[in-house]
Length: 202
Image 1 (cartoon, rainbow, N blue to C red):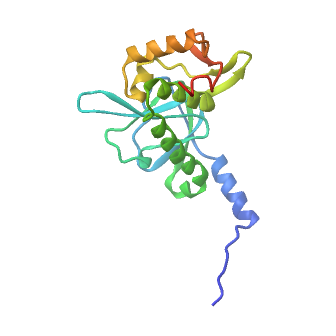
Image 2 (cartoon, rainbow, N blue to C red; image 1 turned 60 degrees about the vertical axis):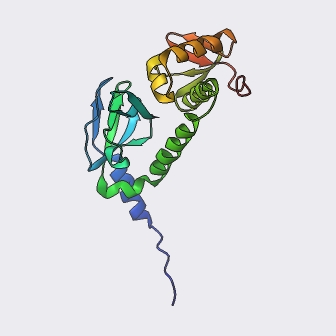
Image 3 (spheres, one colour; image 1 turned 120 degrees about the horizontal axis):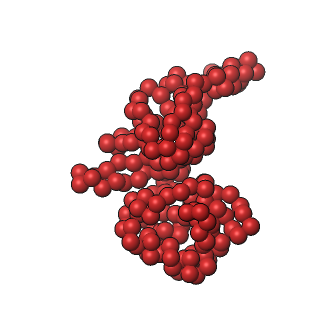
């Protein structure tokens, strides 16, 4: 019995590209919550969001940070409650269920980023956990500047503490310590990492 390998022809590829180019888009403001819909995924074309849940005591638990090119949406989780909060103004493309199969790479990236962040938030001691989280943010939301790498995402110390399962006071103390050691600089309420490997051994 012979097997048949299906190779997409040029017209199929063209049709797929057209489908992805003609997606409807939607705009959201900073701090706005992206609606709960189980029939679509959202592809971020501009801006940044975080996904989060909270405990019975009302403590926020950040599940991930997502930027340009990432897929987000309620079909990607079984966590309840679950919320997608815009950290900046955000523009998304709406991807209906019947073409999710065209987003394999983005879906795999979502899984990989989730596991990477999960690994970071379990690092010990907390100083290493914070430093590696800053490094992760700089790779995802950073750009090179003369002094190092600028993280173009303005997170509060409280928001950072919610990711790393620690206290705001601890985050503030460690950031001050990193700054005193010359490992980072402050720039308009944002952070520039100067020596990404400086604290890896501490």
